[in-house]
Image (cartoon, rainbow, N blue to C red; front, side):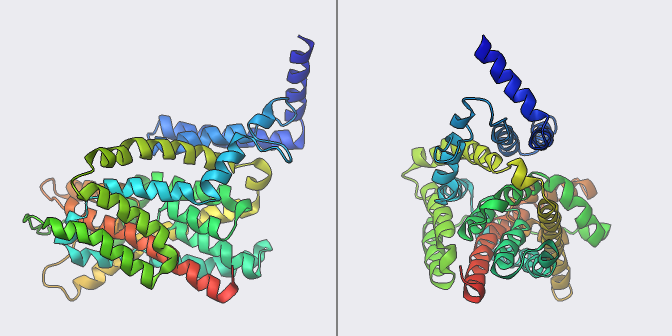
Length: 396
């Protein structure tokens, strides 16, 4: 009984210190994430474990037994073990992309190969934010190689591609910034239905949002579906070698789906693998949200710049579509450009919902899906390009 009261006293005493107050702030942030997951249904599979992981990471270290959770010097807790095994080794992003690849049907893109340009155009914000971040980071005391590395990860946030963001951040060993980077990336993924519509409406007219687009219904030969993941892996591996791990895992997952002889593995990748890795990934991301590293001015800067990148990526896709319409006889609904980000399939659903609000009989989901899957590839390639360019200029 005496030990129990001693533990309780240690915990209460800790919460009364400056470090304890910071932990209370982190508990409040965790509560917001969990609320958004449960009450608002914003990507609950991600935000719920992230929020709970942040609670675990900020428990009072003075309480005996917390070493098993958060670890002590020379003795890692289970959260540190998960980080070292899944993030530091880049295993979780790879496994997630295998699962995503098994979920993606590239058929709409085969029927609308033109949409691949929207997947490229919607990555424009990555590079704009990269440059802007480089300009602003010296005001936060971050310069030189560290600034280039951090700017790389912040720029990738705009693609709304969590696994690629983690991959880039881990490649440059941004451990101290992993919390805000990962939270920004996954939070903005979950907030696609809130962030994208105002941006799209601001850049389009009602007439533009009502444009109809034809969709071809003919079947795609199976050989095309089988060759596509193999060819794309080879091309990406040759042109942008740093993207090969992510592109390769995405394409491998898609090959499992399309080969027709591994239905059981395909379903396992889409369901069990995806669910398990998402839970572990969420907890691990949450574990990086330690108060001392998260409650800094840099965190606010990363969140704001990540939001800017996301908005700019959306705007870049829409403006690209409007530019093409100056030359096209058969006009493209400019909202399709917004689906070129990597948030699959959320962004495509947002575009279709907005089209239906303007005209209940307008169906552009397949074109939006085409741009969306192209954006999935585009963000990975952009991440690989960023790594290559920064490595060439500043070194690892």
